[in-house]
Amino acid sequence: MKVVLLAGGAGTRISEESEFKPKPMIEIGGRPVLWHIMKEYSYYGFHEFIICAGYKQEYIKEWFADYFLYTNDVTFDYENGGKMTIHKGVAEPWKVTVVDTGRNTMTGGRIKRIEPYVKGETFMMTYGDGVCDVDIRDLLAFHREHKKTATLTSVVQKQEKGVLDISEVGAVRAFREKKSNDGIPINAGYMVFEPDIFEYLQDDATILEAEPMDRLAAAGELMSYRHDGFWQCMDTLLEKNKLEKLWARGNAPWKKWQ
Image (cartoon, rainbow, N blue to C red; front, side):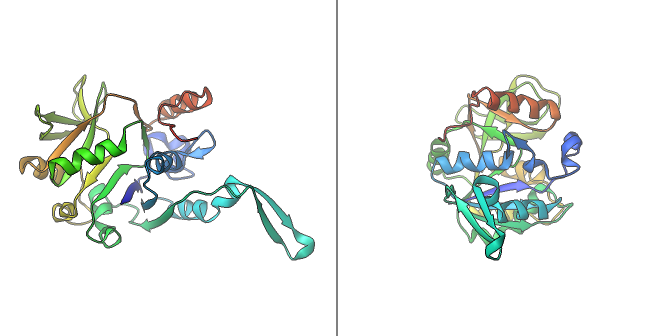
């Protein structure tokens, strides 16, 4: 199953670093936060990724093109024609497709643009700026059990994010984006979609968290998987530093791989 990662926004709230690179490429512990998210999914056996790039998309492509250089010891033998030798041979079992989905395209529009790459299959999707210790296998099992079009992961946070009204059985009755509420479920990403999701997406101006989510909720096609563990987005430098400290102390809850 493919995993779609939204990595195209400019990240203006963390402009101290996003001025020079896409927000998902800002590093935690010497690796882009996007890498951390991919390691999460890979731990659960999901190794094929579609990255929806936009702002400074060439940075993402170049980083993956030179992945061996960034993650291994290298010898450059200039006496023998500049021959390069990779030592250790650390590699990921990944297949990565980076798609330029446009600099100013909205979230729903980015997903719409990668429709040819998912080829009518169920797929997972999350934002490229938040880490989580959710059990992805359990999330997928929940999605398959209820047989609806979409599942999102909800967490309880005292923040202004996408606010959810959830029934006792997990059905999302309403989706409200960025209103001032406290201590109630919000959308944490880590979603699962059936191919029908593309019927709810129109063009580059489509914001996934607006009309499509509203329509899915009204149709009874949007479900919530409640996660009571760790989740943290990286919208600001303060949040980035929080994640950096957790990693440096060896106490990063999202790190389950060795």
